[in-house]
Length: 423
Image (cartoon, rainbow, N blue to C red):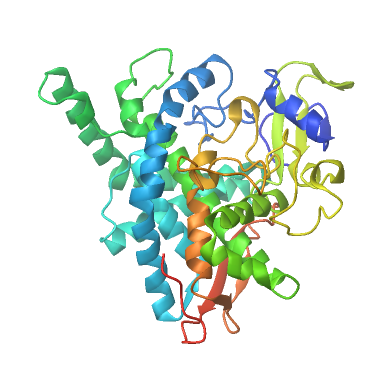
């Protein structure tokens, strides 16, 4: 663990109830580095590491961008043709790095939701914004980085370049639109509806603590990174688990192709078994107590999500198995604790994972959200992917987490014996 602030103790919690209590504890924060941005803390001031009142104000503002009508529009209208276009193109080429494909898919709507403008037909811009997200993703795991100083340097450079290429032009467009709104030249419904617009609109509000445009850009890019990297990782993990399961459960493979509700449960089971953040970390701003456990001020609290997600009392005796049809007690989501909880619960959980399925027998109805990752999984599996025999499937070894892929090459089989189903 390489953090700037010294710690007084290191305490690990691995029980479901205790982790949930810790995630909601107002004395436990995600602020490990107390330095300023200029002093080397590239995460200073952003929502994912802020704490207390400022964090609550930001989340209240930003959560409004995840309203159900917008998510339904993404899922039912905007995302399906994008998924089919990109996956069909990759399948026609016969092979692809599935992680890279997942990033290029997810970033289209992640950028739209965050508020960074780019043309998906501009291949160079598309590749550039994905490359920036890759660097930002290393920064999001800085507390587990093998070489944190190298990560800090790379992320600060990436922020500078990203701001020039995508951030400042996007801020300027929203500033012009907001000025036009104030003059009565356009209506509210003509504004872009995204996180960056909300931040630009409130950047002078002292309650938000948005000190400059670079902080506004860094804040919005948190959602760009979160909506891209984790979705791509989960796509790869799900396909990897489905490939492994074909020997004993070949029916899973076939059901994914035609049953989106089952594909969603595959996604939920995937992140239960392989959370992109297997151990969440908190720092005790003040002394506190979790159950009977005393937490001293300055302690590092490690929340072992992977172990808690494998509690047989909660998830069943086959807890190590990939079983999308498992019965889960109604008090616990199928994904376990992988989306977090408390004030820092993942704001995009419904975008990626959709609404919870409490039972495999539920009538989900027309308003149910399946999540964008389930759609990605289904579209890929319909093209009969298999692990590439001559190109790598590599775990990212730049962090201690070892739950992230760097590359995952697959081949596709579109032969007549494996016809793809119509969407």
